[in-house]
Image (cartoon, rainbow, N blue to C red; front, side, top):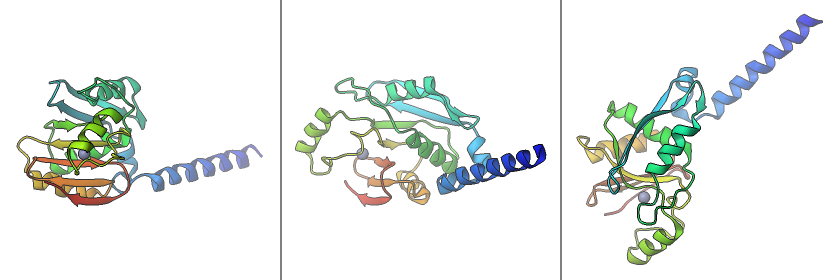
Length: 185
Ligand SMILES: [Zn+2]
């Protein structure tokens, strides 16, 4: 009997691990990818604050590191902080890997408080009223030394969420909402 129980436990563990792999996004489907540490390299253009730390290791998000990254992503106009979807950092990590760069993602816009977003929306039709920025699920970025078109293509190839291309303003919008794409100015 003990053997049977043990075997059943093993089978359960096996299927649980299988589910975890299936539920992971396409770019992170191998066990190696799940266990590999993930680092976010951020540089907020407005505050001059930087973040360059591992925020995920041994298959777990690290709360202290995420809290610091959240601070760097805050609304620089109001100082408001908001929970940032950790998957957003995963997307940046994956893009950095594809582009083979450890250069920081320059943050043009991270979290936006409802007040800031309403102000920007009133000023520009390109700012959505229900922006993913307000949900802590979006970032507008560029990487110094990386062609914006390459950054854009890497984000599109990943297929992890929304991607907006703003060549005149020199940034790519990346979010973890549903997969879609658009171009702005
Ligand atoms: Zn944006």
